[in-house]
Length: 465
Image (cartoon, rainbow, N blue to C red; front, side):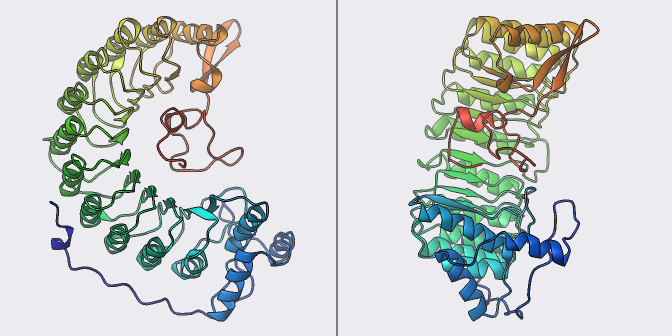
């Protein structure tokens, strides 16, 4: 159907990286940009026991054998996994995220990933690998592709923001032609562009194991978005896909039209992200027409678009009939009071399936926000509402304070918290939401709190953010 090979000649595997000279300890970079002194480095590393674990030992020995600089951040993470393996645990995720704020980080380069991939090829205990926010590049993408071909336990791979381009995207997509184990791949933020997107669309015609694919912020073009929409009319295994922020030109909303047609034909897709697609009222009408026929979609993200109150007429009408949609993200649109009222009427009188609604930053004033709060008193199913960034008046503050006091709106299920000053009720922002930790990791506490990532908790497609 889609012949990605016609876009460009296949890229051959890049040569192995040159072996740099062995260096002593690395220069540890803190999250704020400062560097630890030699004394502080020694103090940090002295907390680690001697290299006795299986993965640590293999990594250390291989670095010495190949004259490769030892990345002590990787060594520390392998130490943690070795401890879990000693406890008899399996199905572990090796987390070497380069954006950790909790400890010093030396980012993983393509040379580091070359060594890492070699020790993971035959490991039976690790089925998840998270190397987000590192410096793997297209060369490291080749090693990732080889790992996917030889490691038959890996079900989760996170490569987001690793400076991977179209050539690296092609290598990974082609590796997935024969891979039968990977279920969740995150390529977020790697500029694979339209060319790389076409290779991933072609891959979905062949691969029958991948369940969730994240290509958000990858600079996909109109051609590749339409290719995904076409392929997904036939693909029966993908349950979640993220196509956020493609590079689109024109005002015709062609991509939205094709994705709407796909939703009419596809009855397996559970989660769809269309953030920053330049969707206007005509586009949301196309999606709503499809939702009359679709019986599988549970999570729809149309945040950061150009939808106004007129578009809410179509959405309110389809929510009267649709009984599968559970999470709806309308954040950063402009539905205003009229749009909030349309939704409130439907939620109060008809819909009993929607569980979470986000209308963050939609230019809604007190009248519309109070209407939403009133619908929650009638609707027993709607449990999560996110309203920060709108125009609160005292009536709004009192209404949501009452919902929380009576237990109808739980503190973990909203992004506001009531407080009183001089007898007046106000609302403050709380760090809760549908996908707060989609891009970044918190500086304290759990990285995957349910209250901060409620969308993925209510509709769990894939076990990782």
